[in-house]
Amino acid sequence: MKQYKPTTPSRRFMTNPTYRNILSATEPFKGLTKRLVDHAGRNNQGRITMRHQGGGNKKIYRIIDFKQNKFDIPARIEFLEYDPYRTAFIALVLYKDGERRYILASKNMKVGDEIVVSENAAIKEGNRLALKNVPVGYFVYNIELTKNKGGQLARSAGSYAQVLAQEDGVVHLKLSSGEIRKVHWDNFASLGQASNPDHNLTVIGKAGRSRHLGVRPTVRGSVMNPCDHPYGGGEGRTQRGTRRPKTKWGKITGGRKTRNKKKWSSRMIIKRRK
Image (tube, rainbow, N blue to C red):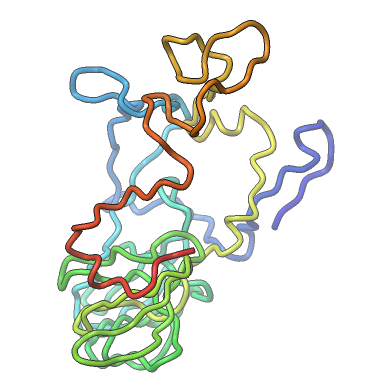
């Protein structure tokens, strides 16, 4: 982690992942980028449906290949890059047939490494293969939940799943959250752990840095008016006025389960996260 000299009170505790000697000093590949319209938390009627969003630095979206469906064609890691739209780093890969694509980088991936996507790919970090061919105990990331849909699980910085068992057409995976779930063993996953595992140690340090990230200020419910929040109103600092913690819209929160009991994927979950 990179730390800074305490030139200001906010700078004193600010930390950031170290990018030097990890990321390549290069511009994003133009053919795989596009501008996304920033809606600032508003819907098609212009109404705010997600609070505390807006502003921030301009960003260019990198088109990531989550499917990695070029099978049995070796690829070389050309560059490792930062992606403003995700916490993990990304890698620009050059396939033997000349095509370039962005993929999610693994923790120990380096420029010049060779990877391949194949049903029976070698057990090497960065390679992508069917879950039934991953030995028990190995870490995987960018895991498919539905065949040929592309990776959906374990895509953020430092996330992973550990293969615990393989039986009856499914693989038991233990996620970094502690959840243990089944995934069909014909689905593909990449070997290793998602890059940038130190991301959770980042200390924003000051309000301005949050604004650069597109996060607008949050106001406590207790300082609002009664019409704006269940905690609002009263003279000076008052008690909450309601027994159970609630959201701005009066929905009970803090300890209440919100998952649908009849959700189809519940049968795939062996043990819920802590």
